[in-house]
Image (cartoon, rainbow, N blue to C red; front, side):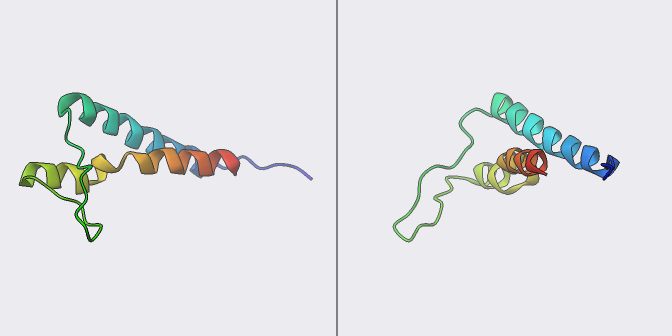
Length: 75
């Protein structure tokens, strides 16, 4: 049985690395942007529009890059 090298996996790995890199860059450029306070119902408490935008854009979801990279490593 021969193993085939999948170049598409490298592309997905690159996307995962970029997600993590941009997340860490965002943390350096806007320290303390992460909303960590929850209301009684379990909803995030967002203090202003800036915090909402930084938390819900794709760059603010860098943890997904780590998860994706771990899934690819298991593949």
